[in-house]
Image 1 (spheres, rainbow, N blue to C red):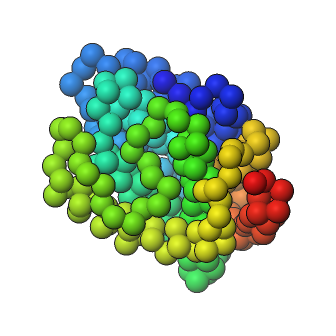
Image 2: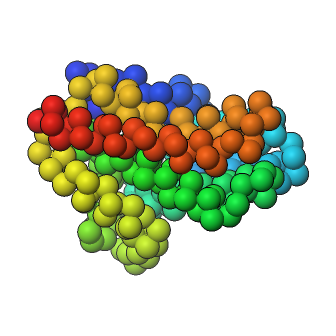
Length: 256
């Protein structure tokens, strides 16, 4: 089940794990496994990748980073297949992503010659890149009236719990989410506060934007680890932010 209607679907370079994620989700649809179980599994894969970076097993680190992206595509698919969406799972997914991103970059800092202050800048850059992608993508999903029900354009207040989850749990996960993501959401919104007024985004624009999707970011890290370019990862992702100063002005001027 797609998050977008047919006319709004685009080539998402960060979503290469979707076909495998669908296979995994379909294999679990008649089992007791839940979408949250799958989220925990991709978190475990990310932790293995971090261990491999610290231990110097860079090929395996790349493998588990890509595996993490594949499994990450399966939790939402399983929730849709079982018709059991949840805000708890949605926020848990995002919380795991940002914590793993921080730990992955910290491990790369340990394994390379990058100073920690520069690593923190790279982490902030990666989060801003991903936030821009998610901001425009969620807007498109709402305009498209696709199948997604748990992602909101503006995350200002805890949503009403869905069937099968507790409001207290949703409230807690929302507070954690806002603490970790709030500053990045605020920055991107300040840079393009009128983005939600657009009718739609061109497909080519969304494809270029998907270069900032987490899946593609992890793919780049995996490739650079495998090629022995560990020392270049931190400066690369700082420079990689140049698209922010290209895509946002282009959207504001040309896409209405």
